[in-house]
Image (cartoon, rainbow, N blue to C red; front, side):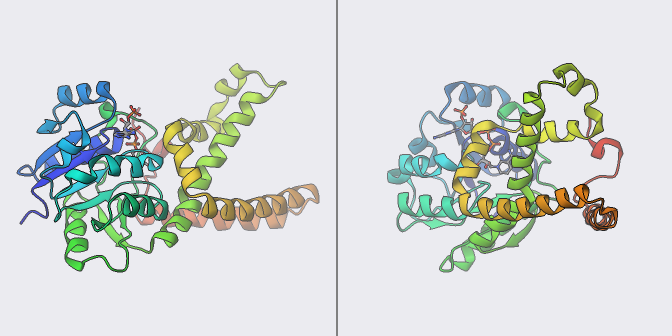
Length: 301
Ligand code: NAP
């Protein structure tokens, strides 16, 4: 039995188009309607044919949906919801794929009073953007975190859980604020650090840019992949998850200062103890199938 039969996806970039492709691959009888604010993206989506229909406005897209899924930058969620509020069927479930959850829930609840809103975050992605970069297997074996409010109907949560499982994801239910704290440390802080390191290297005066590129395999290259992520998406993530990111950043700065001291005062044992602990974390990630031990993290070039 299908959890939903008419799904509308608003925002047809990397994640929205991947969801559409994954629905096609795993639930071919579901009718998919798409909408994107960018007319060029709508044109590409029509050409790529991962939706049954691509509407020219959000209201028309949502009008007969039983699931409306928002896949736009987190700062745009509230405005997008307002744009289809008048057309949303009363029994539809509204969800999203945004990278932070409490601020998105607040924005959706304000725009859609009385609607059934169950936020979600598939912890899967790449540094690419746009409808061309999506693919059907993106969510396979990855986590999707649902953050339903306390009064969410259990049946609705179960339907959304089944939906993500059918796309190949493992589903976890979590409190929205807890999600934001966990993701601040596992995703948002690493992105901020990557943006900083790449920016610092770019600003250096006594190391040339050609040297930075030439010797990038020394570790820098892996940061550049993360630092190539979509600027609008990440601007919105940091502004929307401000409190959790600032708290994690404070702890990170303290730990960095401790490392600075260890280097300054030749505390080799402290450095070695930390590096051994972090190596164990890498081992656990591989054991849990969350990355690949193949050369270059299993990336295909
Ligand atoms: P993306 O490839 O840039 O796609 C977002 C699409 O939404 C773009 O086509 C954009 O159009 C469109 N859009 C922006 N504002 C809109 C509006 N008001 N109404 C309708 N469409 C609008 O970004 P993405 O990577 O798919 O990210 C989408 C969401 O997924 C974000 O909330 C992000 O936090 C979340 N997410 C991303 C990843 C990841 O790794 N990328 C992973 C998990 C979750 P324009 O052409 O005008 O920009």
